[in-house]
Image (cartoon, rainbow, N blue to C red; front, side, top):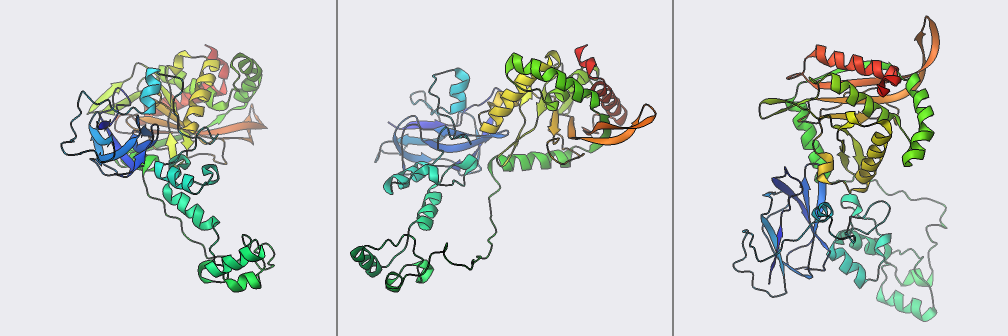
Length: 447
């Protein structure tokens, strides 16, 4: 009996999802646990996996289609099974295919299938790529995938075979086998590098042996704008075009923060095993300042200005093909040790592609920190529906006036971008001024 594949509900507020790409074509066989389709919600791409072995019988939507949650998007079944009468209406008889986020959120099982990460937990590949690799006895670990997070497509396997399989004419191959000649390192003089008889009889030197290096013409790489990169592009464009951005900048003397961090490093690392960074100090200082400036901790939704009672600070994390914003909820109520543990945990999950939707929802203010790069200041784009975002530059020692003298101090630039529709310049300036005061006198974080 055919099994429904439905658009999953990945969060309490999710009403629809976007089909990013079908990883299996109609008529292809899948094994239990194989990824069938990628779906997009908010800023993450998730896979829906097959709960049974079978054939993809039918799909109802093309790539980039927006589908309501719980709607049927495809059917799995047995080869030759009648597909007449299969429609988009979910039934109570067929169990929907679960996705890994729903399983994790419900706490079912410890053998959760997770996407492959840079650490190599699992090789991400489509069923067609797996089948082709098995036919040619290839190690998928040696193949570079061009899909999201390095997923290997069938085309990647075909390209690997083309680049790593020597082309040779039947006559040349027969001569090489009769003479016991290893032609794997020979360069062919035939069409498209094919090895011909003359190459076996009078072999050409290998590329390594040639003194002259032949440089092939460069080819531009073209990558479709889709997945996380497309969502980031759409949201940044929407924010830039709908919210009138105003950016205020202020230079902060971080010398005292540098000293406080150095003193707290061993204590916090001993407590939870994580090293306190300036990012966590800025998250704490920002949350504390927001508590005194509720007019900044707001958002605009459905023509209503919402003054948030909770202070949930998001921080931007770069991931392959885009960025995500995990959220530290209730940051104003946490100490530096707890914020450090939370930021390090969420940041690690973000880079591994394992963040749950709820870990990126509910933010009321965002921090974008480029302090690890040679960036002094920048104008960040607001993460809507929030009304403001803080850009953080690098800390640099420079000579400044201090207590009537010229002294070397650790200086940093903060840039506050805000939505001028609902935040005026004076409240924004007051917020940035108090944040500067707290960071320059970090013992106030203990109050």
